[in-house]
Length: 239
Image 1 (cartoon, rainbow, N blue to C red):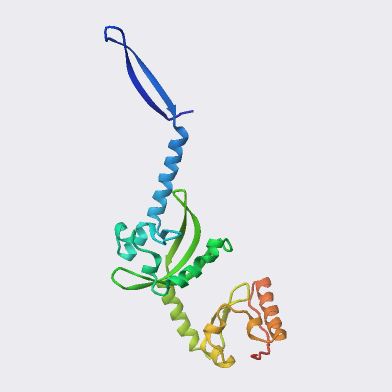
Image 2: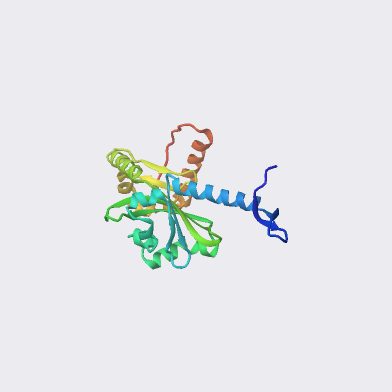
């Protein structure tokens, strides 16, 4: 197999200062070269990723590295970002609220957290983002790593969809496979005298009496199991 060597050679002289040989000392640096190549490859992938990637210190929160996608969207240079923290980009957060957000990562309670917020560019314009944040290591030191998706277009599509369903004459809702409400329309709010902020992320058990909630969940499970549209007659009563 091919090995990488670091070689140091020196001339060998006789008593008359004539060069009579070459003496060499070689060190096998194959593993070091492989490690350096892997690091360089990972650094290239990180820098060229289409997603915005932010690496920041666990204590000061100052950015250690922001990749090209992040710098281009924000309008900042590497040098400028080196003195910034996530709080300089996220106007919806305070120091206290951000520390509370990352606390489960620091304590080990959570391995990764996901949330949505907005980023503020250098020109003060805002864009919607989805953040995937975890505690990792960078250059052998603990660091937070955030992979950020620009969801501006997705948010616009969601707002257009919300406008359509809000003008429907039927009650419309969307639940995830765990039974948590993801979306409801305006007629749902009116009929059950609740707001979206009260409902989103909750289950039927948080909203309705247990017997009714169980009936709703049972029907939901049938749809998931059979993987086809079904029709039911249901009785609903808000607590």
